[in-house]
Image 1: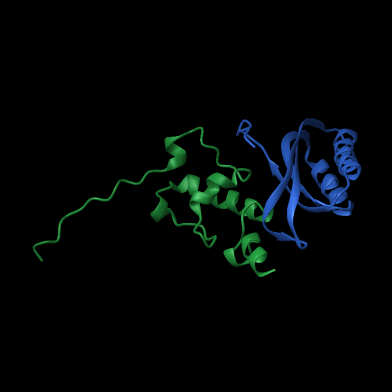
Image 2: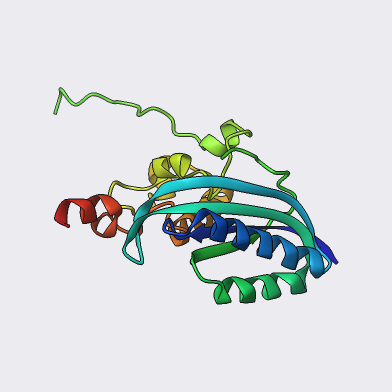
Amino acid sequence: MANTYETLVLLSPELAEENRKQIIENLSQIVDKNGGKIAAVDDWGVRTLAYPVRKQTRGSYVRFEYTAPGELVGELERNIRIADGIFKFVTVRLDGQTAPKEA
Amino acid sequence: MAFRKKFTPKRKFCRFCADEKLPLDYKRPDILRDFITERGKIIARRITGTCARHQRRLTTEIKRARQMALLFYSAVHSSDVKKHTA
């Protein structure tokens, strides 16, 4: 059973460019390795947050869209929790709603 | 009282039903912002006119947006306030 999921992660604005790339790369690889397929990686860039998170008023968002079996989500989130520099994340199953794509 | 006039307020309608393309999505805080008060509370259905189905979704989307710091939980703890006091 594979579903389409979307994970939005909030990264620290203090992250060096290479670390940022590294994290995005890592997460994409985890999806690939566990039988998922990345559909889109969407980089929103640095944005002002609605409220400060860990004393930061800014943060950069990256959105992953992928098709994967449900077990992968747990694995991905486990890795997100371990990784440094990720403040927040949310995973949503996209069903039926055919990608209302605006950023 | 004689001067009390009958008045009919503008008919409310569900914005999401009226415009199918209007995305109801936590990633669009600009749209969600229309459905919260300036203090960040979700506005009741009877005020905004949103239909039950969309209001249910709207609530979850607003809460997701709050989780991801796209919307504030309360105005007191928003970035704007912090900037002024810091």
